[in-house]
Image (cartoon, rainbow over all chains, first blue to last red; front, side, top):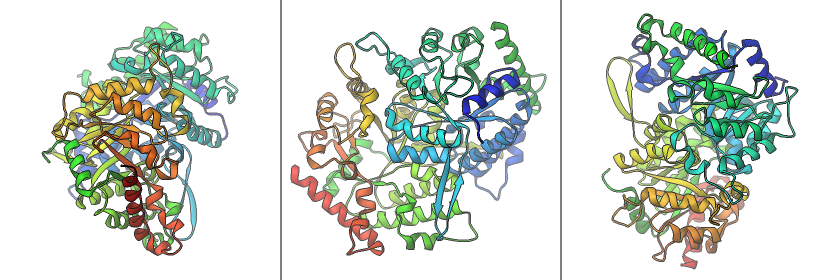
Length: 313
Length: 313
């Protein structure tokens, strides 16, 4: 890899003609029965079978959408719920998505201080030194293109990720204004100068990335900005013109195409819009296709989302 | 389990006569050579060998300190760095610590919204429903006694953990004022009413736990408050009298016994003090014991820390 993360991302968006990110959040209970039955193996633990089902599901979804969308974002919580077996298929999912030419975002919201954050950054973005039998090897582990991170700890907690980004041409998306109903508990608190915490954070993210813009004019330090708060998104767009926004909240969480528009710059770039359930479990509302056609339903949901977004641009 | 988390914790502190938490942060490069050589198996992947070395190291540390200290806190980043193999031994470490009568804190600083946070909460504290071959089983995964969580997302992100705590008598420690140099970037920002973010967070934590105090008078919602900022700790102790503080920053990070004192209530309770490197890698400064005596060095470091803390109470 030898190209700035933002440039790779913008290039992929232009090539595919849309800014859609498919959230690979494979809740086991919603995975079609036939996938789970195929994954069942009485020789393996239930956790291993469950994890295998997630992977098989992901492979079929990725195959169905990889020529349409530029980005996928597997949410690690839905893998970690099955312990190490889940993490095994999380690694495999990232690898498979990459092999299909997709840009990957590890949605892990990791955060810690100093050398602990370095461990996360090496695992998710960089390479890990391993020495056991006398010989040291250096190996990638998750090898995602980017990761979401939480900023409560300040610059200390971001810097190790920043360093791996610089070294390996990777990216991060920092939580700034999240899509959940109570995101305002902390993020909307007003400071002495009338600005809100999310604006302060936006300013931090803008400044952290300011010296490392790609040829596209964008930074490898992006921001998570929810589609459910379009007014706040508009303010943030002004405040951080060079950051790419990762926008959750479209679809199942209630945001529509109009709501995500403020997350984009005037050139129609600068944001990727995530949909998870609305795409990967689209089959639940498509009785014509049924569970057997869950991958086709996901493909059609991507095309419908693409058309929906085109409508407002 | 049928006892309030705070009561179990306070009972363990009283029984052992100290509030020490040993941070199980086994950086591979610092693990004695003989442990790594024993763990080496050419039939296995380097990641699996590395993970096995972490586990063997942990077992010997746990054996050496389990009759002295009440709590251990494995930091998951140092396991996740080896991918699913690391997570495998993270599960094993928690299990082994529990079998030795220790209370466990999964230091994972997890955070997310709604159903995603539920997945983390079930995995770390509760039980996970698994259905693949037609039959549903419900199984614990990490089964820690408690977990650290990051509050940037507001109550939405805490509530799913709160619910598992209520159901399974577990606990959480919410980041309030962290020990790292740049913790003030966000946490010290001043609000309109002159209070700081960390004070606002302290107020939240206090109120979230207020209705669920144990017989000890403490809440199962604790707070992470760094030993490196004693003045802020003093304010927080007043603000949240019923929360147990998890105090990092003692030892390697520069905090001493005097610095942690403000984290305690007048009854000498209400805080647990973590030391990681200062205990588990104590052998590096003990040339008399050497690498072969790393476990004995850890044991003696615990006893020295206990004496150091007793000095100020």
